[in-house]
Length: 260
Image (cartoon, rainbow, N blue to C red; front, side):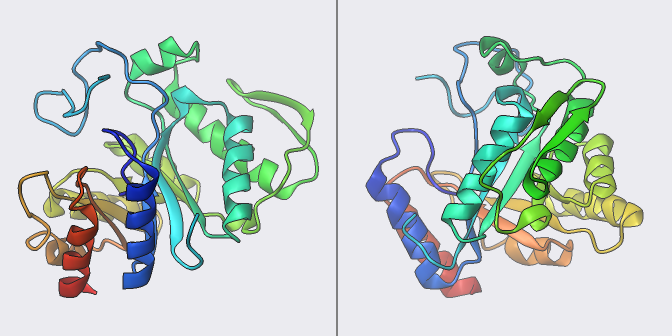
């Protein structure tokens, strides 16, 4: 994971990206939140108490680029289609887009965006993205998303093949990924739980891609005991991280020396 908050700098972001490319990693990923409200209900899905550890206070040629994940409550389908296509164009077809319905409702409310029927809006957004990426002009008349005849340019070099990853926990995320030809991205779960998600996903769509985050905290090195169990769980893409300090590059180098 690229450092994206807690005082990131140009030097640390480029250092991580270039090191990942030099060592042969497949891709580099970041996350996407527009604002962090000063207070919100404890519904963060990746910690036991529902509270995250954070608060409100291309220089590569081969490595693929991804974002995991964009919560739809911070954007709209047309803007997202344009942004993703632009990144794909600038990277010569190396972009992968992670999408989520969005759990941080207060973030969407702060931006004045709708926060109701999030899963249904996610499915309609996927339809709009693929239309925008493949047709000179298009229109869309969904239950929640309505687009008059428009053209979105540039279109991505990968076209409708631009990989989509659905982030989220639960049956709806699995169903949406399977139904729309996307991968499933699981965040901060045990290998056993990831394997359960994978079985559910592939029962609906055999061979569907599965991704998971391999986590290490600031003070512990936990990768060693996680990678092989994730491989056995059927994970196709492992996103490693994160360290938000000057040792991030050295930690990627250590990981590569063991596993790549």
